Every structure is written in structure tokens, then in C-alpha cells.
Length: 255
Image 1 (cartoon, helix red, strand yellow):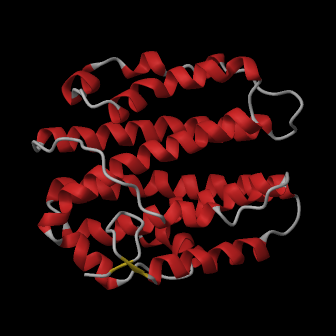
Image 2 (cartoon, helix red, strand yellow; image 1 turned 90 degrees about the vertical axis):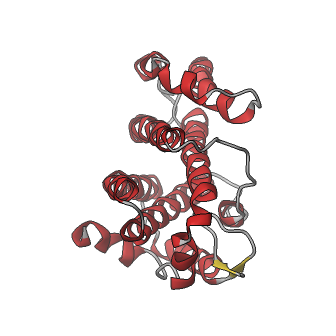
Image 3 (cartoon, rainbow, N blue to C red; image 1 turned 90 degrees about the horizontal axis):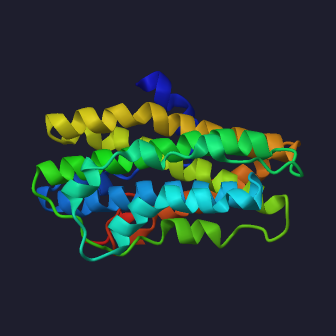
């Protein structure tokens, strides 16, 4: 695990504060933490889908991606949701990645599509895994407000290409790296089932971080360390700042 986490710790500007871990350990926080984790997995998949739609596929394939995401979005955004029915469906029917057509006019479309498709598959699978754990424990999914972490990173994205996609990919790397770091932080403090589950996520989260970073570097074609450090400082401030909401990517709990 330490070998897996070493690049993550080198990349991030700070470790998760102990106060966040102490809050996460509290039994009363388990339900909101699991629900927010569910939401994070969906948001990660949606972000990758938007990335593919804008930068990787022919427009004729857009409806296929919408169909892939629809069962997950319907479950989350509709009030009359049925977790058992959702989990019992054949999720393989929604995997339409073999039908996607790459955009021939973008030099990096094939690489973006390859890495993001794998990420989407894994994020949707993680969503289902979290929901399965919740359902087995009698925890109902409910809508909770997302934290401001991702929004506060996105507002710093440059507005002209290819700088926009480079910034978005760097942000994706930080989000995945922080997720990996926090899974490792909380795993030792959870019950055996959850500890095993969060430890099992570390490898895929670390790979997502590396995929985002590699894409950013390849598309830029020049050294991006200065831009990475720019976002490193922003992400560090968000993690170390006092935060009134407790979420998977929130800052230091204010109470």
C-alpha cells in the first residue's frame, strides 16, 4: 500500500488533516459519508462522459453515452427510487463502449476515449458497490448537497483550448489522488467490511490519477509542472480551510 500511495503523497500538497479523519470515524457520519461517496462516483463518471463527448467522440455517438448514464442518473435524481431493482438489473446491457465512434479530427481522441471509458466503467461499478453496501445495511439513498470542493477547483480553469482540457485533466488528477489518499486514511478506522472495500479501491483510484495526469501531459506536449503546482496550492487551501459541510472532499470540519 505504501508503494501505491507514494506517488499520491508526492503529488498532493498536503495530507488530509487529522480533524477530518476524526470526524469521519464518528458512527453518526457513516451514512452521509457513504451517500456522498455514491454521489462522487456518479459525478466522476459524468465528468468523464462530458470529457469524451467534447474531446473524443463523433457527435453521432453522444446518445450512446447518455443511454449508458441514464439508469444511474434516473436512480439518483428521481424520488421513487428502488435500490433493489436497480442493483438487480443487468448492468452489462448499458455498456455501449464498443459502439462509440472516435472523432477523427482530434489527434488525442483515441487516447482520451480509451482512458475515460475504462474510468467510467469503474466509477459506475464503484457506485453500485457503495449502494450495495448501503442497501445491505438498511441505509436508504437520499439526496444531499454536494460539497464545494470540485466547484472551487473548476472556477480556475482557463477558457481557451487546449488549455481548458489540460486544466480539467489536472483537476481530475487531483480529485482522484485526494480520493485515494482519503480512502487509505479512513480504512483503518472502519469495520472489517468497509475497511476491505476502501482498501480495494486504492489501486483503481491511483490509476485514475495517473491516467488524468498522463493525458494532460501528452496533450500539452510541454512541461506542465507549473500549472500542476498552481492547482496543487488551490487544492491544498481547500483541504486545509475550515469547512461547515462534511463531505468526502471537504476541508477541516468547523464543528
